[in-house]
Image (cartoon, rainbow, N blue to C red):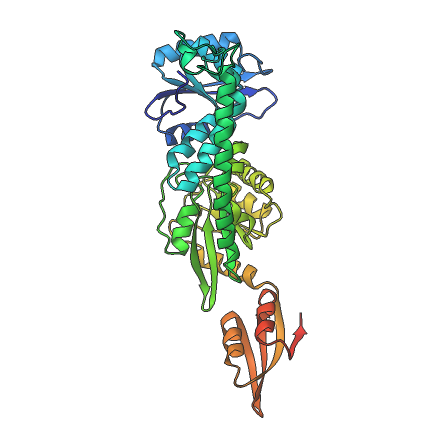
Length: 435
């Protein structure tokens, strides 16, 4: 029953046990989307309010018996809880329900395992699964009896054998040793990949780095396709893509940025996944600007914003410059909620990545972040130094040019963020007229 955590093509019953002190609402909407993304067929939903968490089964024995009746009525193959369950709670529930029981974290790990395509993503998912499983080995499996050391006719003899005579060791210890060894190997392989990725990021030099972050299925990949020629996979399902893609984004003539897409977030994202995908999220950690894509059409939009901010804080991006982008404005139904979000996020840009609405305004907003505070400059340069004029025309605005005796005096506007590069081209004779 516990040989696999996969739920593809299985008939699933979804369960949400909500503690009384928690808020009301549909706690199964997102779990339904997660289960369907994993390939399960949802045949029933069961939501229960509980006063306290039952340490043995999470829910009471009576409710567990009612759930067992539902399982038989709907011929379900798996029961998926929207809560994180302990191994002991899963074992006790499976005894009563008599089908496989998964919790929210196991479901998300299964989806990630299905979506992983590249070597890095597969290693990251395997590491997350093993780190999730390791502390749960004690009560997750049925074969954790002592292994006979003498070999012979016992089934465990093939594990023991010569040199292991005596009381033997528990199968649990063997499993833990194997899992621990594999975790060490995976971390070593991922460390090497991390080093290569960090070298790639550092090698991008002075290019302005923009990273798209947001809740899963908020439209991040659609936006990347709309702004660049990425042509990445776009599907209306959770965690459609796991791998980071980076493309050049032309902000205007002469100004380019590197635009990266990242894996989507969800509330209560398993910590093992956050840790394992740290290399993938390195794009966000090293970005000059984060574009936080917000799905306006989702009724739980405020909680989604909070969940994304929590994950960003966890990976060390809480203080990064961020521009909120209100996506799917073309299908928004609650105008009052849109106005409320615009009040809470006055600098946010409204767009529709699918139709292209608002993308020009978004580009202008990013360009303003790229340039920074506009400065008035007066630059004295040799007429032979064409790089100065080219740079100022590409990144700023030339207001006036005065030529005399082989030199040129230029009055121009330029963003503060480009001032360092100008000084590299022209180390002397630059005067800031007004700030």
